[in-house]
Length: 127
Image (tube, rainbow, N blue to C red):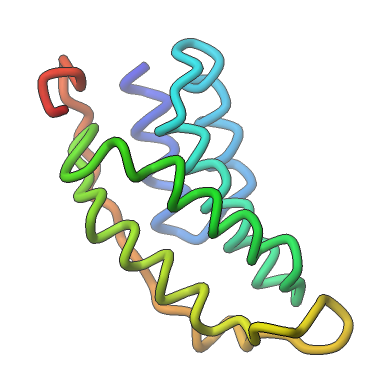
């Protein structure tokens, strides 16, 4: 599990979102945790924003924030409060009424986020 987490962190920090999602999917299949599901949605949304999409990323970012909320303040070594603030800052870049094809987000304007690379032995102790 720690190897998949380390791979996810490394890929996320390198903005290699697709391989990062693959590592997260291993974790999600093992635990079926909404925490991992939220991180998957965040990663997919960032990849889609980079590709010029906005409709799906808006949905994915919104639901990622909702899925991660119960894990505040920290979980698996991540500051979930700060992570949800980051998601909100990404959402604010997406024009409210626009759909894919009518507008896009300049990915250079999307704030960058670096995640710490530790995986605690007992994440349940952080709840």
